[in-house]
Structure formats: C-alpha cells, structure tokens
Length: 328
Ligand code: PCA
Image (cartoon, rainbow, N blue to C red; front, top):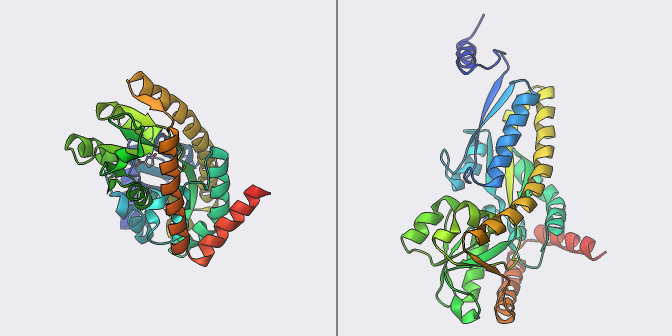
C-alpha cells in the first residue's frame, strides 16, 4: 500500500519528469555565491554529475547567491536538516573554532600547492568538528589569492588611514584594522550596493570576485598582494546521507572527489582569466611597492600573532604539523 508521502513524491517525480523510484531523493543545497562564480559553476556541475551517476536517484537543487538561505544561516540549516547541503566561506566559521580561519592568515600558504597542503593538513580536524554536529564535509576549494581594490593607485601605506574597506570575513577585518583602515563585513552579493551607496571605498577579495562583481564599475586599481588563498567548503547533513542507499552514497562521494579536483583547477584558470578581464575593463593591476608590502607584512604578522593567542592547542598543533611538513 502506498503511503501519503510516497504517493506525493511519485506525483512530484512525474511532474518533474524524474524516474518514479520510491527511493529517489531530492536535496536542497544553498550557496552564498552567485552564478558568475566558478565555485557555483563547480557545485552545479557536481549536482549534475550526481544526478547522472545515480540515474536520478538523487537530485540536488542548487540555490545560489544566498537566494534561499543567507550565508550565516547555511550551516545551521544543514545542521538542522532544513536543507541537506550547503557551501560556505570556511573562515566565516572562525567564531566556532580558530582552525576554520587558518586559511586567511598571511604567510601560512601563499600558493595553490601550499593551500592544498594546508587543506589536507586541516581536513581531519575540520571533518571531526563537522561530524560532532551531524554533518560531513564533501570537498573544499580555494579562491585565488586575495588582493586589494582601490579607486586610486595604492603606493603609500598612509592611504590605508581611515579607508573604508569591504572584507569578506572577520580576519580580513582585523587585517584592515591593523593597517589603520575601517573595515566593513559585506557579502559578495552586497558588494555593488556597498560601493554605490558609498559605504565602502575599497575591498579585499580575489581577482575572481572582482571580475564576477564587475569591480571596474567602482574602482580603478587592483593591488595583487597575494595575501592568502581562503577556501569554500561544501558539506551535507549526515542523516540525509545515511538515508541514501549504498550505491547512491558512493556516487555522491565519487562526484565530490571529482568536484574538488576540478575546482582547484578552475580556481587557477579563473585567476588567470579574471585578471585578464580586470585589465581589459580598464583596471590597473600591479603588485605592491616596497612600502606597501612592508605595511602589509606588519599587519599580517600582527594578525598571525593574535591568532596564535586565540588558537587552542589543537588548532596550533595542526598548523605546526603543516609547517613542519613544509619545512621537510
Ligand atoms: N571571494 C569571496 C570570498 C573570497 C573571495 O575571493 C568574497 O569576496 O566574498
């Protein structure tokens, strides 16, 4: 006999042209980043791969740009099971544990290879912290290195004084404070409004986000300062995963592994094409001069030593191990 939920899901399946399998699952996934972001393209490809590999047994509907769930609510929603999957900027979780913000510390990982090693080194602890809350990370991918967008040529550290800088997380805000600027935390999707209403004069983000948010509408210069390569993490509700049959579970994990590999390559490629796009649209791209570089270094050193003061033994130990490996 067919129960009510089942008959409803069969009706829905018929309506959407899905295979009418009794076990077919539909997941909702939320990401704060817009469709122009390579991260969003990657996660949509992941969803397509899963649908294809499972013959429609699992469909993942991706809601981008914070349209369904606001950034700060994505992890709590996945934890509750209101939605099954989410993507966040990993370092926005730093209030929960300092391990989540090691990828926004200067001098820790300054290249894609190092950023990937840092991910490998921190993954066990991050996985454990997610598991403690009934969730499972699927994959993580770095953004290109962070730099500074201004509407003037940045050639003197004095220019940071009082500069209102948009920052994507708390650590970047601290960094701006250390430089003498005045930071505001702003979501990617709110960048255009922040500039057009005059709330900010500058921003810290990557070549990619500068390109997808058409930075040339607001600023004229990009200082490619190679500050750090922060990551996004994609994760799911463990109970939702456990409800899938074994073959579907395997398909999810396999597609996730491919998404991680593809995503890191997309990030490298996007960094190049986005830097080109910035230039083509009239942005002057340059590396910091010695004075600016020295100020960034000092602000970064401060940020790092403050982190050490905050970090517990566990996070500190993971970082030590990573640094030890790098030195070997
Ligand atoms: N883009 C995102 C996070 C880091 C990045 O490069 C943003 O600026 O919000």
